[in-house]
Each structure stands twice: as C-alpha cells, then as structure tokens.
Image 1 (tube, rainbow, N blue to C red):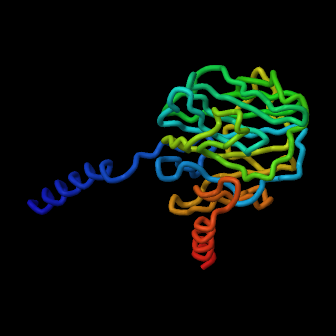
Image 2 (cartoon, rainbow, N blue to C red):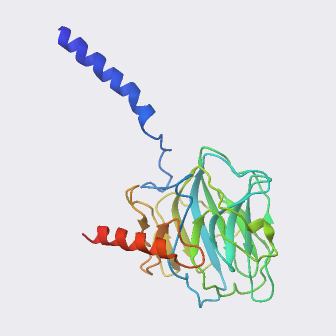
Length: 265
C-alpha cells in the first residue's frame, strides 16, 4: 500500500512539471492538422527561388489561418504573406488591424488598412484579395475597394511568410529589422482568382484543397524540428525557415544542403 502512495505522489509531481518544461500550444486551427510557429528564433519562412516571376495576375487571393500571441509595436508592420515588389498582407501595429497593398502595372499600390482589430489568442481567417482593385478581410468580412486597378506586376523575388518584406526605398514603413512576433500560421493558400467577394463570405472550416486555381498551398503538418515545408499544390514552391531575402546566402545554402541530405536518408 505504501508503494502505491509513493508512485501516486511521484506521478502527480511529474504531471505538475510538464507545463513548466514544454511550450503550451494553441488548439488546432479550424482546418486541423499542424501549424507553423513564428517566434524569436524562427521569424519567417520563404521560398528559395522567385515565386511565379513571369506572371501578371489578373486576380489573386492570399489567405491563411493565423493565431497571434502578441501584436506589433506602434508603427511597426508584420508581413503575414508577401512578395517584394508585387503584393502583401500585413498586420499594422498602429491600429492592430490588417493592411493590404499591391503593385499594379500602372503605379505603386497604397497600403489599405482598417477594419476591426485583430484579436490575440484565437484563430482568425485572413485574406488579401486582388483584381481590378485590392482589399482584405478577416473572418468572412471585408472586400475590395481600392488599387491596384490592373494586373499585379511581375516579381523575381521569393515569397515570404512572416517578418518584413522589403519594399520601395521611399516607403520607409516597410524597411528595417525583422519584426519577431509570437504566433502561429496554418493553411496558407494562394490562388490565381478572387475567391471571396465582400462585404461578407463563408469562411472555410476545413483543410484547403488543391484545385485548378491553386498556385501554392502549405498545410504546415511537418514535425516542428523540420526546416522545409512542402508546397501541396504540386508547383514545387517549398518554404524554408529564415535565411532567404532577395536571394540565397552562402551560409543558408550550406544549411539547406545539409538539411536536404538528412531528409533524403
């Protein structure tokens, strides 16, 4: 009997230690499956090559499930999804709201912000939408009301999720050090059509599926220790953790080669 009490006490003691020794994860997103953690160590992921560099999109939708544990400081911007010189969906620190911008064939697109503040500690569906206009939305509310007034221009830069996507030098709000937030992203999909028309639409409640309009899709179901995240669309635009800004650095190349060799074993 005394041994049973000892074992019970030891079990309860170990249980109390578990929350102290492991990170508390948020519940799965409505899409289920895994998720990408963004933190002080891993502040962004990106492709290692240009993302559809020769396309001039007539329509584009970039969407994701996001879960923020904190928000940007005043006047800071954090890229949710973006490509230098073409488009971006950002979180604006001044009002804690979403912002969207796009460069069209005639002029640089302005940053469009507004709407309700992005909440902390819950999953929200966010989307950037582009056709003859540009807009954004959260949890099924939003729409298109402004620029770029034409096709999105070409870009030979990688696609990036997280951090800051550098823009025109005259637009200083997009320059600076990477903003490292605590949060999670799940189910990022980019499509070559406008999937949602405002002011309201039905929010998807399951895993995104690949169809004829899908350009890239990342489920982020890989193990947390992995550095490579598969593009489920079949177009081969896989994402890698930090190290790709405007090209692949030599040091990053060595790391990717080593990691790829380990994955192939």
